[in-house]
Length: 199
Length: 219
Image (cartoon, rainbow over all chains, first blue to last red; front, side):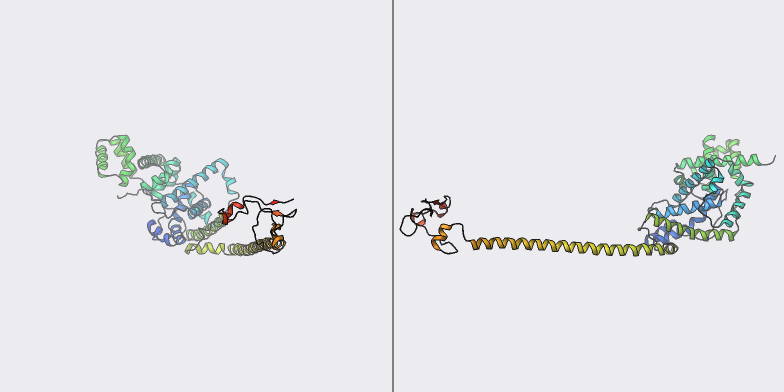
């Protein structure tokens, strides 16, 4: 079925990547080669997915790393029938919301202390600046006014370009629930943008 | 199709994720319901999200570092979990192996030395045990042989036969009751075979029956 994309959050990568099935075929003979292809295919999408939830480049970087470390140790990762893409986004989403919840509970300043990643400070700062500007205007700002549930499903659909079935697998909900939640989220987003428009 | 149902299907309707029958049902409803039609029109008109305009050079540096950091973290996770099954071997493993090279080599060398020493010691212990067992068995055999030799040198317990024949190996002679083989009455202290024992095959008595009675001593 065709799809009319109305939101485009994701930085579309120009690089051509093999399909997940092709990666699994490679992984059967050389697991690390398959893992290498998987990382190159999904690292930026996982990172940006985490970035839009955490709003912090360094945390998003750490989360994306965690996701792939877990993936490396996941024995089913290249099994036939295993939903690799959905698994990556599910782990990433859960990890991000754990971080956001902990941050809200303990306060952001404490979270900044003792962070493991000390490299790329300049790059992280540059991306955080871009994110901060994004969040003060347009669609990103409107998204911030949605509930986490609505924001997540919009991200998964229009930012990460996941199919309805993949979203159902990521969120562990029924296909019908994906349709209704996504519809309600878009209606709500439309309303929020309408509220923001100058009278 | 009602308004509530349409509200739940707006997104898949716009995204083209519904089958033809559902699409036609929604279209019919939209022709009759202005509220739903306006909502669908508004949702369909949502602007595209603008991309995060990250400097390509910054992004490139970030993801180059991503691979290196990931290799380090996987290497550390492998060391901490000692997961040998997932030891890196492929292209991506090159970076990981670089991280693992020195510690793994040290651990392998140490383990090898320990195994060699431990194996040698165990082997030697096993050999000593085997030798000790063999010596014990040999000593037991020697003792048994000594006892048998001593018994053989001491002669048979049946002294009355030895005394009569004067030979090491008793030459059993069956005599008439009450005789000592010389035709004289048995001397005091001489062992005399019981009567049944003196009945041999000549008179039809089985030899094996004789052994059931003990010799008697004449006083």
